[in-house]
Image 1 (cartoon, helix red, strand yellow):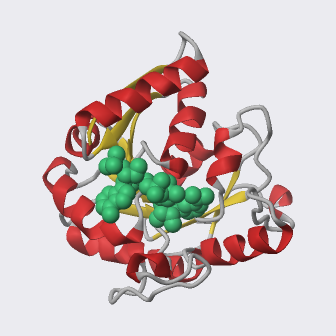
Image 2 (cartoon, rainbow, N blue to C red; image 1 turned 90 degrees about the vertical axis):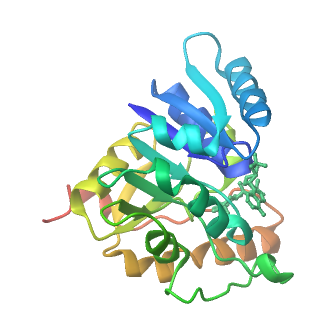
Length: 229
Ligand SMILES: NC(=O)c1ccc[n+]([C@@H]2O[C@H](COP(=O)([O-])OP(=O)(O)OC[C@H]3O[C@@H](n4cnc5c(N)ncnc54)[C@H](OP(=O)(O)O)[C@@H]3O)[C@@H](O)[C@H]2O)c1
């Protein structure tokens, strides 16, 4: 599948680009600078070897080319990025937002969160994009370091929130192309008000144990099969 990673030059997005590229998807890394995007794509190809397809360009061009658009940018720049890609994200397209509204956006701490007016960063993003874009929130409990460490299986679940079951399943299928990763349907997009804040909790755990790859796992998930419609 053709996927874009907006902000894929950064920690979380680069890890996602590596994992999806290794799974055989065509990945376009988006950046505010086409050169920076291209540079990170060439870094990814060096890591993945010749078989992967990873390209880099502007956020707008990356979003226009993809069937599924991942967005991995800091909350401080999230609204500006969504305004920039809005024309390129046609109604019907699936967007997977990984933004956590950490207090660092206003000079606070990474283990504290803000409350966006719409309730969550994902709901803010949905309010900016064209009507009919299928918004999903996920990846808030997946550490960038774990994504980038390709030799190690990721020991965390992707908590997926969204109000369009098919969009969640599309995101879920991409997630499960990454070895060992499972997705868990956590309900409507408004549940992102909870899942986004877990990044701050994860950072708290990382600080307490001086590690960088803590995560969350839902018990019992393997026995449940796919979510009920
Ligand atoms: N890092 C993690 O372990 C982790 C885990 C779970 C969730 N998250 C969430 O994922 C998102 C990305 O995290 P990250 O650690 O990857 O962030 P990051 O490395 O600081 O930034 C990602 C990319 O976003 C762009 N960017 C940075 N500041 C920006 C601004 N003010 N306005 C617009 N664009 C900006 C940059 O791309 P260009 O300069 O190329 O445009 C940058 O490479 C955050 O919302 C974070 O809370 C992160």
